[in-house]
Image (tube, rainbow, N blue to C red):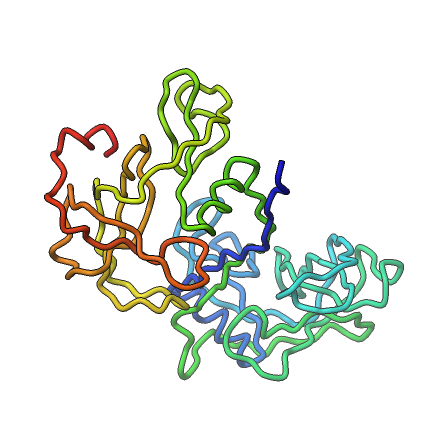
Amino acid sequence: MPDVLKAPLVVEFPFTRSLGPVQSAFLTGLRERVVLGVRTTDGRTLVPPVEYDPVTAEEIRDLVEVAPTGTVTTWAWNHAPRRGQPLDTPFAWVLVRLDGADTALLHALDAPGPDAVRTGMRVRVRWAAERSGAITDIACFEPYDGEPARPGGHRGDFADPVTGIVAPARLDYTYTPGRAQTAHLEALAERRIVGERCPSCRKVYVPPRGACPTCGVATSERVGVGPRGTVTTFCIVNIKARGLDIEVPYVYAHIALDGADLALHGRIGGLPYDRVRMGLRVEPVWTEGARHPDHYRPTGEPDADYDTYRELL
């Protein structure tokens, strides 16, 4: 049996969100080296601030400055920092209750080792050299044995406030396709499309999954399908994806390859996006060195009858 393939993959999505008045003031304050909390009607000061009281659910906007010094309430040692974390050397994750606050803020503590960290130790904010209005404007916390700092009484009014943020989300992992999809991918490298037939219901699945999703039995009989197929349904994409060199609008479709009982995904090219339709007969277009079809184009055949693909919608 051939070796099973594996490859490193990255899923990344930059999430953009707008800010309400409380979060806007908090992040703008960090840019200006000011830490703001929000005071509830019963006198508690919450840091980081929230827009609604977690006990009563009422809206709260009474901003109050707290000190950049505080006390560690709990901690955990991070011996192997990952990409994108606050420090690139081992550090402690800490919850710090800043002086003047009633809740704790999660951040990193720069310490030489776990023996130097303890619950109850005093720390202070180390500000980033360049600040933009983000939680990373606090570079980290550092041990501190001086007097508690005195807040300046700032009420959260700033020029040029931060009104939105971009939060990058990323997942790095190694993908192993398994026996069935390894064979499928190796066939694609030879410009062939291979599925597997269920020994019970006799349906052919592309790409193969190693088991029939309907009957739950293992599949091993390989079957060549396509390369031509039928568009069963589609969507028009109007938003350009970062890193994808395809002009919008373009069409992404479900395509039922001839001989297959499951539609796969593919981009449609070779005709204007507004002429793509259900039943359109298409064939794959390969590019030099590619391991899969670049897109599908019309074959010039008459459209398929609806009854031939309705079960694959």
